[in-house]
Image (cartoon, rainbow over all chains, first blue to last red; front, side, top):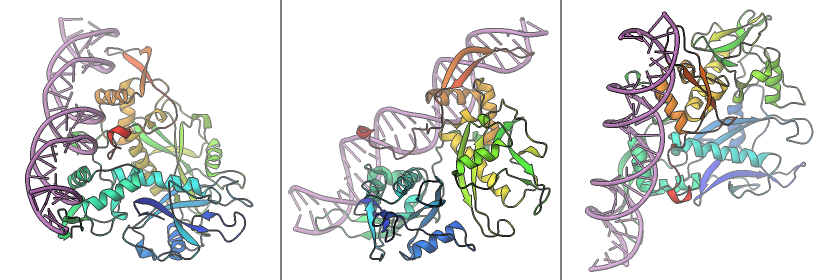
Length: 215
Length: 215
DNA sequence: TCAAAAGTGTTCAAGGTACACCCATGG
DNA sequence: CCATGGGTGTACCTTGAACACTTTTGA
């Protein structure tokens, strides 16, 4: 579960209460029940930590299956990326905490590499899809959005160009409302929302486009 | 297992000899052993059909886990994409056969949707990575390569532009050798090979690049 | 009036597409 | 010499980046 908090991309981890790796931080998860698919399962697991309605996007990441990834009998894990908009602050249980993905504590098992894979997946998809909607509140200013993108991507994304790129892709719609300007003045910002819902690939500049006539 | 055969993207299927779905076409696969990870397992399974050295690329696709995807106790499947260069014609067992991915026969279980997902994954990655190397022979002419790309992508890719795009990305190296011209004449084509090995992302024009100074 | 923040206009560069044109070979 | 197929040159278009400039607010 990833969220941009305090201008930093963070992941929700849970401190293990059992051996092995007692006390280390680990990803939430659990066993798959016979009557559910893996996505239903991960939503059920996460529901124990947060309100699942706060999950804007859930997608499979990869299967981790190395025989020695955990001590004892081999455990096959299907990892997911789940995204929470930055305006919610879920009530999380006592033994869980948010941690910056670029400054992780010592984690249990192979969970660090899973988190890093998730981070990379998010970074890619932010660029060529509309996935930003899952990190942003329903309404936002462009400068707030650029802060989110900057935090998630790990480098500065200017509001100017972000605005233009997303607008050109038809992803932004102005709500008409304005955000009040801060105490130090400045022009009030217009509020926008993402058009459509659900993730879709939006970068039409992918190479090897079909020939013009057939597009 | 995907291969371009006869200018068509095809998948290797195996005719089921057991109920349920006796006689239908299904993807090769099998149970995961306790001492192997999923990739090792799929390579072992495929080794029963072809020479594994012919697999130029193997990557995880997704987990399919719907409780009713197969009759009886639920089976969780981790699907893979495996690519075979077009110049090899593996000896396959009697009960297997190649089928065009765009004209599949009736398949067992959810295997049709798995194949279509694999096709879409391949199409995406052909565009922004060097994955073409896994579909092409070690040496090839540009026009042969454009036929491969056209078959895999499902639309015409012209040799002219394919040549330029791949060259600009530094993916092509001329071997110096020439292919003989056909019986109807024509200038003999130069032979090329892909530089490097293994898949890598090559489209540097992905959007939201880091600012110039930090690149 | 000035500082600060938002937003727009303009220019530039990168990279894919289209298409005309030239090259080399077989018959 | 001509048909055929390979290869190159060039103009164009789309799209993102950079940056100057304008707009709107609070103090």
